[in-house]
Structures are given as structure tokens and as C-alpha cells.
Amino acid sequence: MNEGDLRRPGMGANFWVALDVIRSGRMPTALVRCVRLAYSRGRTMLPKRMVQALLFFGFGIAFHAEPAMGQAAVKPTGPGELPPAIIGTAPAPSGEAVTYLADDDRTSGYVAVPDGDGPFPAVILIHEWNGLSDNIRQVADQLAAEGYLAFAVDLYRGRAGTTRDENMALMGEARADEPAMVANIDAATRWLRARPDVTGKIAVMGWCFGGGVALSYGLEGEQHEGTAIFYGRLVEDPEVLRALTHPVYGTFAANDRGIPPDQVDRFAAALRSIGIDNDIHVYDHVGHGFWLHVDRDPDNATAPALDAWTRLKAYLLNVLS
Image (cartoon, rainbow, N blue to C red; front, side, top):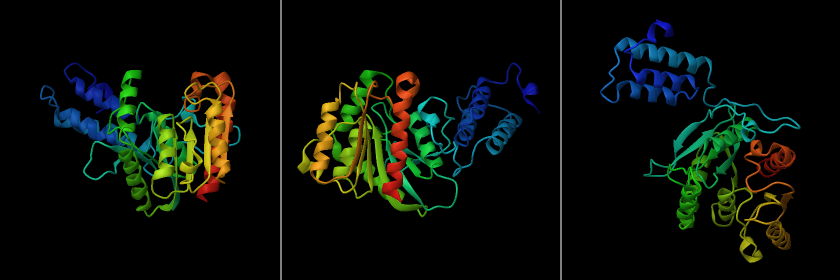
């Protein structure tokens, strides 16, 4: 049986929806979803041979097109190369969704594992104000290609915003319970350290809302080896910052009205005053969010994003080796 034999009136919309999902490359989750579709909504009950065909198409693509778990979906970047994830050319995420909080199946993180047996150093990624998105998952895939076991946490319990108002509401709710956010990342840290393929060394990084949370976690969370902040909310009090036990990386934007350069300068000065090694840089001609979304302003963002990426790779190598 081939597709031409199948595409005829009366086959049922669910079959074709499921087949399209399979062909998108989102396997193996899509295979489960498509079988559910095949038997859901009692209006469309597919004959046995249709389900067999569905599985045939699905498994064929799963085995021949999609990288298996543990295989990086992207290549390591070379000198002068930006990660495809931040220029809009990355393939669909190829890692795995996992639950990591006890008694909470709504909160689902995302793990991307490098090729090889490991053990690997790990990086925890904290999403922007809109929630855990494919953009963050694709950055996790890139970090896996670079040799890090990458784990993107979910601080919104499976929810994501699509408008400014929704994003603000989700962010405000999360910030109102900072101990819960720290506990969430603590759980991710313990989940990683329990894996035999993790060295035990972990860095935490985040963007926007997630950048501020990464700093908060550096001050309040379980012991870890690095904090990387991309244009996140800052702390300027040296006495508070004394809780940090590792070097700090920071990338900021000169045109960011929420976190202006003078605030970044005070943060860097506070770190220096207490002897915390840091690599903090403010880039000219770019605004908030520039690094994850280079494709929105490639003329201005490409060079700063590349420099920030080169610095990040050097920083992670330093703190996680």
C-alpha cells in the first residue's frame, strides 16, 4: 500500500493530520500522537490496515530520517559560525521531554544528550518570559552538539504565553514565588546529578526573565559551577552577591531600556569588588533579546551574537572542564 492508494475520499481527516505530524520529523512522540488521533473522536474509526499504513510511514521516517536519542541534531559550530537556533535555521528539536518534579506531571523539561557514552558536563537552560519554547529547545540541541548534556527547565508548569499580557502574567506569577522557582531548578540539578552520563559539573544559563532567574539561582540554589546571564535582571549589592561561588558570564545590550548599561556597569563593579571573576559585556547597537533572535535584526545583531557565543563557549569550557 502506498500513499497514492490511501489519499482518497472517506479516509478520515485524522489519518492525514497524523501522517503530516509524522512527516514533520517530530518522532517518536508524533507516532504516539498519531495513533491516539487514529482512535480518538469516535467519528473517525480507522480500519486496521489504515493504522498499519500509518505505522509503516511513521516507523520508516523515524528510523531513516530522525536522529535517535543521544544523537545531536546539529553540528558543533566552528570559528565564525552562529548557532542555527538563533538565526532561524535550526531543525526541529530532537531531544526528549521529561518530567523532573515529584507529583507534578504538568511540568515537563527538555533534555538533549550529546553523542557518545559520556559522562558529560551539563547546562541548565531557563526560558524567556513566554515559557519553554522550541527556540530554547533548539539552543539545548546546539549545546548537546558542543558536548554538553543540556536540560531546559519549565518554570510555568506547561504553559506558554503568546501575547505581551500573557507573558507578563506568567512571569509575574513565577516571580511572586521565587522559592518555588529555586526548588524547580534544584530538582533539575538533582535529576542531572543522578544520571550516570553527567560528570556532576553544572552551569545554569538564561535569557530575559530566565537570565534574572539564573542569577537568583546562583545566589540561592544548590551548588553549581557557572551562571550565564543574557540580559536578565541584576543584583547590585556586593553583600548579596557574596553568595556566588563561581565566575559569572553576562551578555547585555546597549539599547536595552529595562537593563541599561549603567546598571550592568554597577553589577560588574560589584562583582569585582568582592573578587568574583566575571566576563560581562555590553554590545552596542542592539536591544533586549538580540542574542536568541538574530534573525530579527541580522545587520546589527550578527557580529555581537557571534562574539557572545564565542565568549559563552570559552566560559563553559572554563567552568565545566
